[in-house]
Length: 232
Length: 345
Image 1: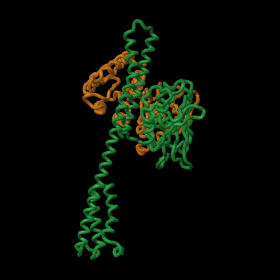
Image 2: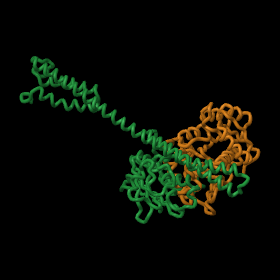
Image 3: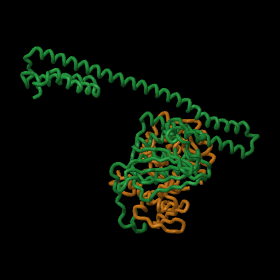
Image 4: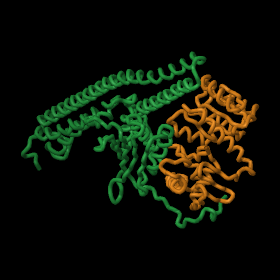
């Protein structure tokens, strides 16, 4: 699925991690450039213009959030951060600052490649002619242009809010979407504190679209952060 | 008035227990203040002339001074005793912490070394014997290294969690949410390891929202499920169920994770929650911290956790989460319409 032309910038100071990612990413057909500090990473983003940035949060010279802010001032290149477990509030802050996704250490190459694919797919969707392509994963099929939702061959009827929730997740398919982002996009700014709405409606959506709502195959919860619609 | 029947020093005795109480509860400053105020009150109400601070009898002056001194001495002694008791308790706790730290260190270094040895061993044999090994053996060895490194990662997560629980550094962010979502998150995280297992989930559709920290309660479910995986044969069923407790308004939710494994030996039901206790059944090689962490997390939610031996065989782990406060209102859409009819941006 990866395109040999696509360049990934890896900002990471730990040699063992760089070494393992180098083998895996080059092996999967990506062109890889590496930076060891945050400052170098920001400079290389300007000179190399990568398609995707992988940023480790534990850099010696700059705080991860600073790097994200420095980049988001002028570029929309997708950023995936590598973070440690149990820092949900930091993850939310990073996502709010414009990070596209995160990956919790330790992670497998498969997970990283899936995140990269989702991020690249999303930046591709910024092009208007590709935005409304039908979405499909497993038995679930969503046609945003026709506003239709299918499980297998059966059309499923959703309420307006359920549909808005689903279409928001489809537009960000594969990427994590925070609860507040969903509230903003589906319910509007006046519901900013009503996080339980997202949870209750996600449950409705799962009961209509998942074979086993308690073991979701499509609508994955990222506890303490948000939700992710699986793409593969 | 009582004063014709009671002597001034009798009355003073009534004040002294009060001073002792103040000294033991609030320390030296307040108790000295209480002593002075008591003497002034005695002087004001119970010495002639009444309702003035003036005293005409030098004997009464002497009595008041002695009462003040006695009060001050009592307050000093009480405060000191109190401080000494505190210090003794702190010292005892330090000894206990030290003992725990030592047993933690020895347990941890053993538990971390075992999977680490697995990783090192598997990888070094792959590297050194690359030429001599066939593909399937190499894959086996690498798979072994991978599995062991995952186990190492789980051990570290538990250790970190334990440290945070003990240091009191655990922040609980409770939000109202459906239990189904937390159960789903835990099952998703264990997806690959649960793939070949028979899992039944039984959550009533009308289960109320529960105020909980999703990250922490997911950890509880993960630990319970991992235990069930470790201690039961691959074909044994694992079931997760929930019921609401209290009617008509539910006051708590009760979750059960039950398995059909070897079960618990009598007496293990309580001791397995102790730190580093792995029960008396053959262990799957953990730190013995998983259940202690579960207990810590459930307790900070105000709930309880316990284990039961299932009569038909197997073990059940049960925890409750109280539903306190007013559940948030959710205004549902009044007329569900087909999705196509809504105008979307």
